Image (cartoon, rainbow, N blue to C red; front, top):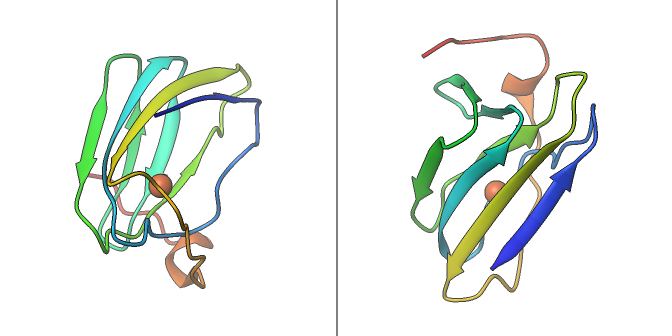
Length: 94
Ligand SMILES: [Fe+2]
């Protein structure tokens, strides 16, 4: 389980979670999640659930800090980075 704080502009880069499944919950502020299919604004209380192989990027692109809780099973042991062709200007809103 990870409790993360995000300063404005802070992000993960595009990555997956190895063989872990996970749940991301935004506790405070707003985070943006970008995937190949969509860009989503996640506000307080929003959750994303994902299986192994799920690729995304999470960034705080607001001017306020954010806090999120991440739970992984099995425990996260790797976070391979991916090239990010869809994270450079092509926004798809879901
Ligand atoms: Fe992630």
